[in-house]
Amino acid sequence: MTYKNIKIGIVGGSIAGCSAAILLLEQGYDVTVFERSNKPLVGRGGGIGTTTSLLEKIKNDGLIGNDFVQFHTSEMPFIGKTQSHEPYGRTAWSIPLDFKVFQWNELWKHLRKNVPSNRYKAGIKIVKANLNNDSKVELTTENNKREVFDLVLFADGYNSLGRQIIFPDKKLEYRGYILWRGLLPENKISNSCPLENKILRLSYQDKPGHNVVYYIPNSDGTSDKGNRVFNWAAYIAIPEDELNNLLTDKNGNIRQGTLPPGYMSSSTEKKLKHYLSQNIPDYYSEIVEKTVDSYIQVIYTLDLDNYHKDNICLIGDAGIVVQPFTGSGVFKGYNNAKDLIDCLKSKNTIEKALKLWNEKQLKTGKNLLALGEQMEKAFIWEQLDFAKVDEETTKKWWKDSVSFPENFNYSKNK
Image 1 (cartoon, rainbow, N blue to C red):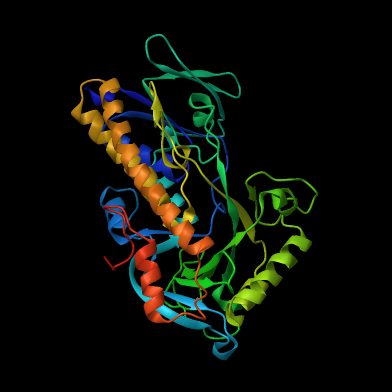
Image 2: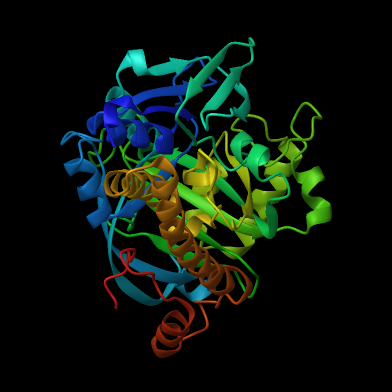
């Protein structure tokens, strides 16, 4: 197959879209990225992470440079709230990690920098995709402009237009809990923090859910002590019939799926902060209390029977949607694109390549969804209260609960 003769359109210029564009351009494909926002995609997330091995692969493939700032986390303590161990809580057990954490913004800026400007069309919203009689895909913009491609990748997130077009019966499934997130600069913390190179998992007091806390570099990419940012993420069970009330913003509008920074009502913020103050150690509760502009993500999952229909493909969160505590967000988009390149190289038609690619994505996707369900069961619905259990009980709970897929393991425990 002659790569330069294949014209590929990518809908969505976030992490998955930029990653795919860089990898495909490197192979000589004719690639165009369409991003509906005409502004840089900053401020869309706090801390994220991935395995050390995956980050090295991303770096070696030229997606990010050696100046990309991240922290290496090497330990994950399981901590519970008890009066006798305030203000930091009681550690039931701690496992060794091999995981890198960083700013979502920093990753996107590095990726975007490596997509040539003439290949990245900002401020262009795609509203329609049709398959022509010659198997080519016609994309229609909001201004009714049409462009034709041999292959189109939708990388437009969990509410993907592409998925709605080719699999209209597939619907997001609410998992019964939300993720409430916030960031606090280290210089706002009153006392020395024992966090350092750890990712803490804080249980609630015999309630479903947990809170994850770790440091990330600040928005300028600075990682010096005193200039870091404290990143916290609280998983809280919320009945579905209470979602609309929770997602009603300060202007009285009901949001769908997310409540962005700066839009939370004071009553909702007060209620959530009180909940955590009762359930996590005082030191971390104080950090949550000091945080402003926190935000909410509703947690959904979605499985797929196929990752493409004809020459329209789904990558990243446009494909399967997995629970976020798997840490697989970066992995999905990168892996989708790498597999696609391998399949295009090994087959002499796009049709044959996509058939093979689809088989690979289904296998990987099922494994990640299985991991997500295992971790959801353990960390939400059967969460131990780490203030009450000993090391052996915690070890057994972890060993019995979580089995990592091949090539995706952030724990050093095998």
